[in-house]
Image 1 (tube, rainbow, N blue to C red):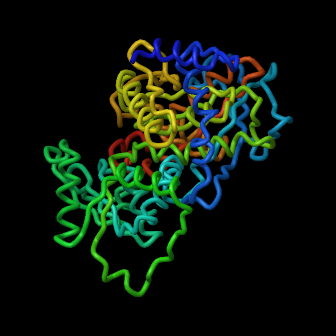
Image 2: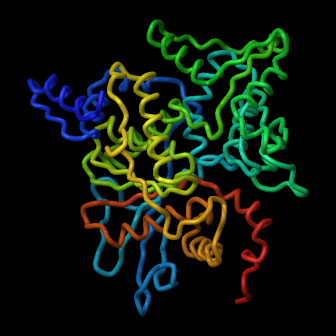
Image 3: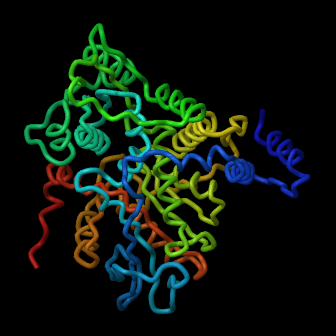
Length: 440
């Protein structure tokens, strides 16, 4: 069924209620806001004890001569305790500003966006008596490190497959993965067939008596169980658990599954509280996009709560067609698993989605950095105390700065700082000359 037909049929079925959907966003928002299943999504056990995030406000003032921020003609000042709620400050004549949601402070070793993705996922694994997980990533994969650390903290074994050869010197996320998980380096030719690679490695771990679970199957079974019974979470049997057969769950690269959206949606619910951003304030949320999962979760959260918020994601690892395809697949999977209206299809070719995907200021091959970007990260760190990295969060910072200088006063800009700073260690190995700062 085409989207246009769906929207027309949806309008006909809801016209008695005075609702006339005109776009895909209207259709999806209508179903999410009025779906009891979506409201119940937040009534669950989470990995994070609370969804709180510190919020800073960055003031941008122009130096003499004007020009762009990258040319060094603007400076930043960090307001660590900004006025929020009804006291939120808009742009004024002499300066503009944007807010920074400090998810980079959630955990010393786990990226903020990774913590959010694992927020709903980890309890599902525990409830299903999983003993370990198998996942994969690049040599400096933040996802792999996040899974290794988070599993170790909960007594689960993390089996990590990393693409390529082991570096001569272990640093950053690679080192963290090696310290917390069981790491195996996999040739690129083998890694290219990810599902086959993950399944074979899981089979070698569980042996004849163990069992293998794919994450989506575990999640769907958990949703059905949650709907049919009142869940009582059993306490771990610390005496006999070592005698039980291995039960391993396979997590896809980047944890880009529908269950990963829930923790990000929980963050939106937290931010929409009256004393923070509120439900009435028009907002533009800016985020860097690796897989794009975080951006889709932010947009779904805003739609499900009926917020006047837009999500803009800076594309870093793929072309726009790839991100739109990922968005469509994630929304379809989310609707199928978590809502009572799975017939609401995701956006198709030529139809707008729920995330605004934009190019970074200077597009380049993923993983590459340009001369001057490390120096810009250094300048931001010295002026604000906030560390961004040149691969991911500098791109979001740039866009938030640009939007805050262009937007009208009634729309506020907020950047989600997803973390990523441990990756600076690996970059310092690859781009040694960029990190040799000139003498003052």
